[in-house]
Length: 190
Length: 226
Image (cartoon, rainbow over all chains, first blue to last red; front, side, top):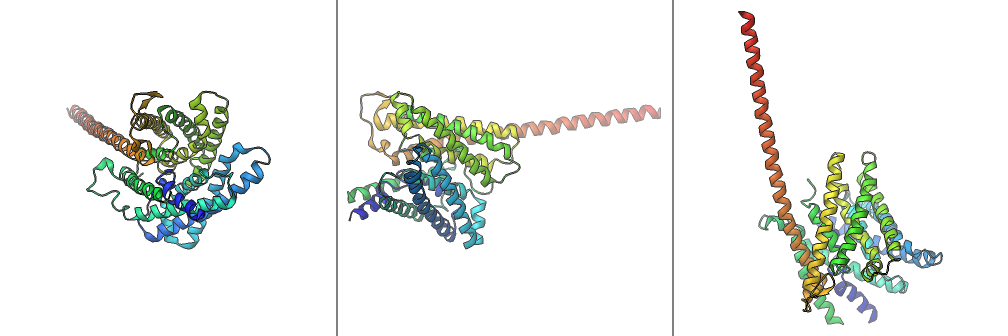
């Protein structure tokens, strides 16, 4: 029951995109192909989970032991970069077409930011399993927003939209609405 | 951002600010974040620009990420020595300044690598100043509308809860981005018109010079015949 609540909170109430905002950059790239969306999101999720586990171990068993906790941010960015490089290799191995789209846009940088954003908001003083559930919830929330926004990607630059409001402002207005709905759903569980 | 995406630097600034909405609630906190991120952005990109010709975009981005993170870590440690309440609060959350710094670096590294050195530096300085202005404006609006205060001084009303929430912050950021984008488009339009006029007059001047040259040659050849 408690695990379910932790995961539901991470999905709706403290969603990594609609609450923390760190995952928004992951939405802003050429994701007009469903296959590419699935492959790149899966690679990001895998990278975040592995990265979070690594950061937890390094922080609690190395940095705390040598009293260098202030290096936590650097370790998070370093591990996020390594995980993004692994995710890039995975995408290259899985699909050439997706890798072409990946290289054409700034998806690598977006992946680094999303991974850093998720790992930064974790409370590493909690237990390993607790952090794992929270990361799973964050990533489920991230994927949920990705799927909800998929229908909007074609509309971001629609000719019917007021020109200066195209793309990012439309994306943020939509996230504002999704955020209101998610927080209402999240409050129902608490 | 030419063929890949219609995104521009104002949009990336908006996305960068959206990544720290939970930690920016006032003008002062916005300014502290903005100045720290702006410094990390300028120093990081200046160093990375040295390997512009020899390294690809990903390598430059990784280098930029490491440099900006190291700078922000140093600033966080230094801020710990101050006793001002808002600086103490900013220092507590300073590690989150890494996110906007990482997002801001995307535009110059992935989309402006064909510019000359002078234009490149002009561009990154423009981005840094727009970032600081955007953040300060956002901080002031959120503090005023969400908490009924300006620069930590209460204005006598509680504020509207919507603007104190992250979704309200997205609304404010989207609106500021749209307004700044209107200004950006007007400036680009104006500059294009001026450049077109300059090109037009250059052609006219060249035509006049050519005509005069031709006239002189005709006169010289007529003088030679006589």
